[in-house]
Length: 285
Length: 124
Image (cartoon, rainbow over the protein chains, first blue to last red):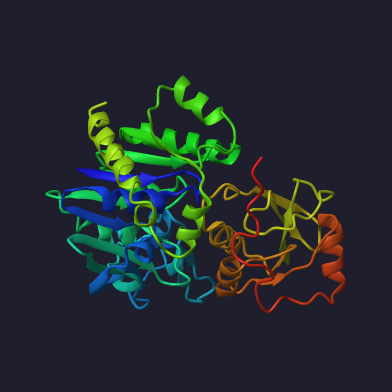
């Protein structure tokens, strides 16, 4: 079973919930941190890393001898990553590839009528594979200055072992990296906080999951702060609230030291175990 | 000689748009006759690469210079590859910009004047 932990708003407690959930399950667990722009689950789980792999994406290189400056590559590029300046008055044209905008889809090379485009690998980050006791741990890290996390996330997700319970810590937000992360999950837990910001971004995340047809439920973190609007929203839209974590200073202090909730409050293991059971019950919704 | 002025409107009296890649209009003006063509910018809402596309569009218009408020790194690179000089820091109306240009003394910029994503309008 693949369970992703997402949020909409950042800083609501995705990693807090994901790590403590993973540590409370009495089954074989695989933990994936897909927040490749800012991985942080390793701070809490302290994995022993066994293997590091570079992640590459293919980017076009143009053979200017062959190029006829026809502009076909530029037309088919969905990301505006190529500029072709046609030559005039006997002057040769020029072609510019903006690698940072390239998603590595390969269309330019495929459609080039002159066969002038070759794809070469460009390193954009790495993934690390390790263990936390019996738990398998994988996360990825986008190189500084790079903008595209999805290729890293795809690489991480290639390691999904369906014989295990897979817990995926997602990036915040609702854009491409989140979609790539939660795609094909059996269930998604949305962690929110009962504030206007939390609710606004929760609503956006709910829309995404509905589009992707992924069953989901809510965990309300710092549940005794803020207002009632998140509860009202869940009730109105028939969204199950699976767990509430009241605010405790000790949890925040532990977080700042890189300690999961269940480590400092072992009694929470039961609550996270309950959360896991509820997820399993909710799944067929 | 033709120059391109980024504009908020489609007239010579319109104000210069301070953005290049995501400006409202490109006004292509003949500096001798003040006759002009207007190109509505199709790249205003591009998710990314607006500067590249706009640079490319203008490169095909055979203009000598671009007069605008600011230019980002990708647009600058594209225009440079096309041999189009970019003059930044322009304000006022399109007509005033062209007149100032004709008087001479405006220096082309040696590099981008703003970073990427400068021209993305704030969310409404």
